[in-house]
Length: 316
Ligand code: DP6
Image (cartoon, rainbow, N blue to C red; front, side, top):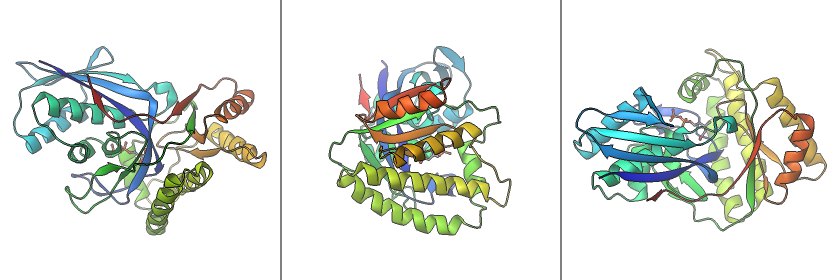
């Protein structure tokens, strides 16, 4: 037998940027995300007689992280036989979106079903957190919150049950020649910023304000809080006392300036940025083509894609 699960990636509008427990992957703040329809991972697991094996986008790969995660699942759920994991990422690397969120969510869903462990999404979100924090939010469609919690049980994600709204995300790929700093390493460095404590306080307030903005379907407010939250996160990286760094390139800055310009013209556009140089612009479905055109005019060589609100995990 085999089981297939599809999970969509998500973009954090209130970011997770720091761990208070690295083994359990407990975050220092609660976070809030929008699941994206156009970017997803399809994962099939099939028992085999030999050893865990991973085939990623048609190629056999040796991802220590996946092997370690399968062992975490065995520790939590009891022993299960070795699995062949076949995963197709429909998260174009060109979009600059992390695929770990959709990948670990799809893997958690497929494995638990395959071994006959019928868990609800809250329980799945706790397990997936151990693979990658952001994966915890990818079981739900539309808007999700990940409660930071204080232990394994209290750190989980749930749906916000938010009303429908015409929100869109314009993803602008920026090429980067600088060596990547992984999310985990970036977070370790950010924690050494003297501003980290203030950031925690601000993030907690923004988490509350963002929930109100989402429930009120106020896309302008959502964008404005998200941009402030993201820029504050990146300021921590710059002010880290150990190995300060930035994910921004000159093109990142250029796009941020275009977004400001658009706003001055009365166009709804706000930026958010994750652990890389790419900029994701929060706007509405009807305004997305205007944002895309402005970016294309200024930077004709960059790849741009628009994403809308997506659904939660599903099984074939
Ligand atoms: C900036 O979930 O990739 O995208 O738990 O170490 O795997 P690990 O980190 P990861 O970090 C995501 C960081 C972020 C913000 C967010 O998605 O909340």
